[in-house]
Image (cartoon, rainbow, N blue to C red; front, side):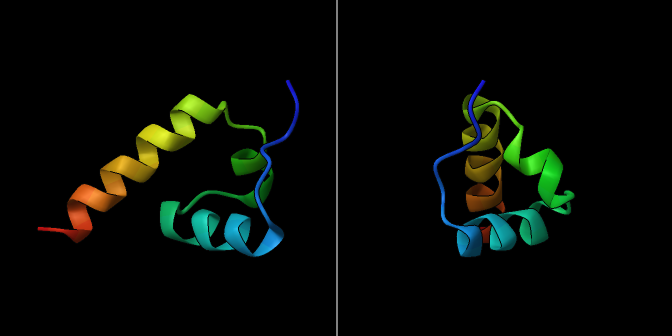
Length: 46
């Protein structure tokens, strides 16, 4: 599986928000990453 197609700045921000190591974030399947981002969005909108 190829790494995610996101900028380094975006990757750093996501890793920080999701409390994940950057390496783990970059090797995460895209559908799981999108799911986690949606969960974050829900929490922020509460």
